[in-house]
Image 1 (cartoon, rainbow, N blue to C red):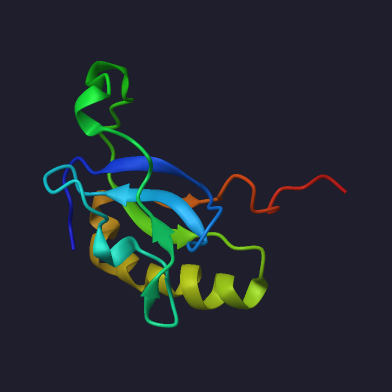
Image 2: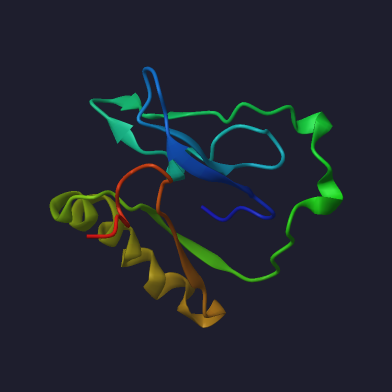
Length: 116
């Protein structure tokens, strides 16, 4: 699917019944882009961000005029990276003429970038 002007809300670990909060949101419906949602056991594992779209200062949101291919949410597990992130890149062949950037989410609080 191709979406114009989606809202990329930063992903962070959730506290209650969801694994994460935030993600790619369709700017027309203000719902998750369903092709970009992480599923676990046939259930959505992302919660909508706690926000009120009407109260956002639209002029303060960064505007990016580039094309992106969504690569998924990076998880701290190599197997999940292979199955849930890299596996999305098959679509690159269809969009390579647009020279897209590849967008991955690295959730805050996930431990993905902990210093050792």
